[in-house]
Image 1 (cartoon, helix red, strand yellow):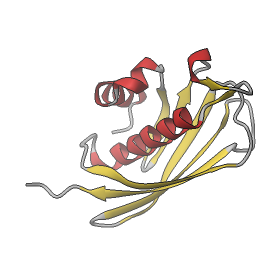
Image 2 (cartoon, one colour):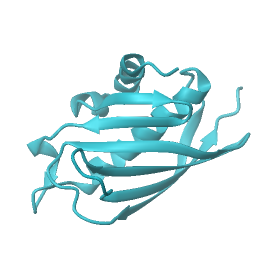
Image 3 (cartoon, rainbow, N blue to C red):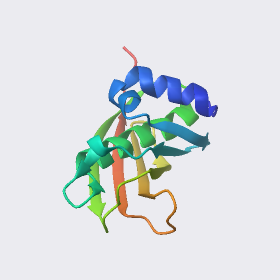
Image 4 (cartoon, one colour):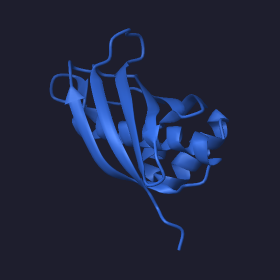
Length: 137
């Protein structure tokens, strides 16, 4: 599945918080997804930058969307771990997250997400994440 509108709809149904934040899928294909988090005063922390919890949520749904491009939209994995490195302030938004699958095995999936201001060339946040494939029962 690579249709941005269809992926956005799945994301909004599965994670209502992403809908409340108006997160959208910009594009997605073969293990890569780019998402946009619009600017919102509700997501800011002191210093006029998007808060860590909002950035971590964006990273998690971005990787989920990258995974759905490989599963035909079937939700068959869950987050196992996430390592977040805040390199520089992300600013007040909007932010763009680019998630990509680095390695997908039968039971574990490893990926990374780069997040930064929409108009910047350099990332503000680097995330690595592991997901576990759910056994069908």
